[in-house]
Image 1: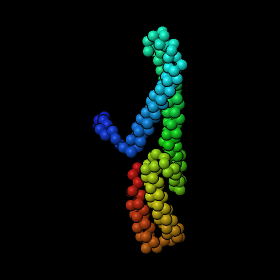
Image 2: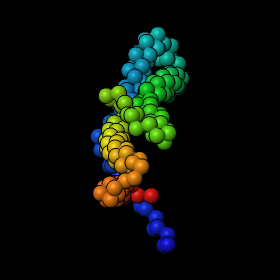
Image 3: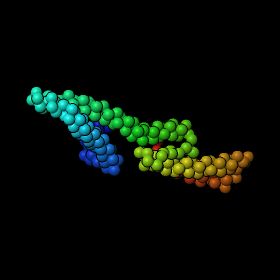
Image 4: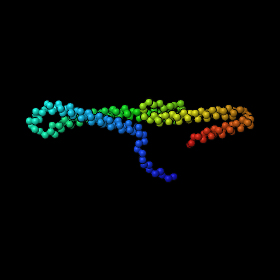
Length: 189
C-alpha cells in the first residue's frame, strides 16, 4: 500500500459564516478595548492637565514626561480590562463548541452500547448543529434498517420453528435469508 501524500490546505474559508463571526467578534473586542483606552486617555489627561497646567508650564518640562505615567496607567488598565472581557467572551463562545462536542461524545457512547433510540439535541444557537443533524439522520436510518432486519429474523425464526417444515417453508426460509443477506450487505465491515 502506497503512503498517502501530505494534504495541503487550499481552501481556508471552510465555513465562512462561522469563521467570519469568530473573526468579527475578536476584531470587535479589540476595537472596543482600543476605544476604551482612547476615551480613558482623553478623560484622564484633561483632568490631570487642568490640575497641573500651571506647574507644568512653570517648569517647562517635556510633554513626554507629563504623559508617560498617564499613558502607562491607562494602557495597563485597558489591557487588564480587555483581557478579562476577552477571557469571559471566549469562555461563553467556546461553550457553544465544547457543549455540543460533549453531547456528541455522549451520544456516540450510547450508540456504541447499541441504543438506537438516542438523538443529539443541541440548542438553537450552538455550533456543530449541522453535524448533530447529520448524525441524527444516520441514527434514524440505521434504526429503520435494524427494525427491518429484526422483523425478517422473527419471520425466519417462526418458519424454522416448525417441527417438520414443508418444502415450500424451506424455500421461503431460503428467500428470506437471501433478502436478509442483501439488507446486511448495506453494512460494510
